[in-house]
Image 1 (tube, helix red, strand yellow):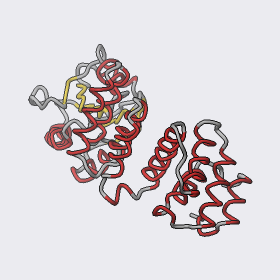
Image 2 (cartoon, helix red, strand yellow):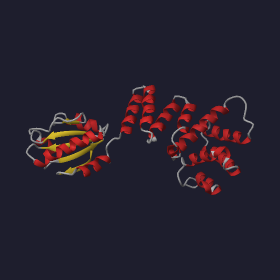
Image 3 (cartoon, rainbow, N blue to C red):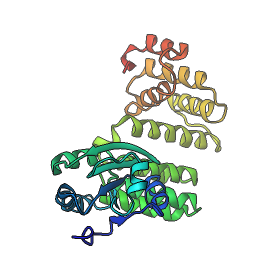
Image 4 (cartoon, rainbow, N blue to C red):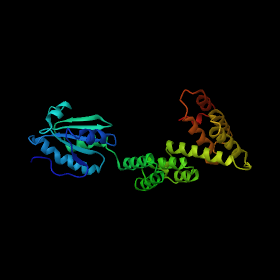
Length: 285
């Protein structure tokens, strides 16, 4: 065998001439596993089918780049390669893992699993790229499809909700979050974003004509306006604390959830946070 056999789209040949482009630049987008090998080393030939299989199994979670030390030995030595096979995993232009000699498939699978991009990571990366290119509608479509194919990943609906909020579609963002599966909806990140949306929607409503008859609703609107329009966290938090003290479960805990979201914005030693938790110890995490 004079070179590794033809492989899948997730594996490429790299040389001294294209190492910067193939390995370093690609490592900014995801993990790149460089296989330093030689046709004269039996362990290299046994290792290659394993790497080929892993590249296929991970389906683009990492890029396999093979460098032949028989033709690029001087360059490999500059990279610290003194024996083969040697594997180096690059991420964000730096080596994050090194494996010397032959390693079994299970160990390599565990190592790659710590670094490899997941299909959900790919969805998010595509959406972020679309946003950078000014294609927000495309990004939303990518995320909406990703939320269906990866319903277990909270990052996808949260990112979509934030894009909707940025576009002024607050009610649609709230509906999206409210209809997430229960285990996702109950996570702190989702609860905080829903509480922030609630403040935004309430402040928006408060700007319209008339005021709600319910005094508790009026007080909640005051808190929302203090936070959103005046950036007055202290007034917002104290107003919500008064609501929670008077009726902890009002509107299914709406004020309580909002207050908890605000407290998570504050450092643990913040006087406002400490004072609220002394008044309402049931809010302690």
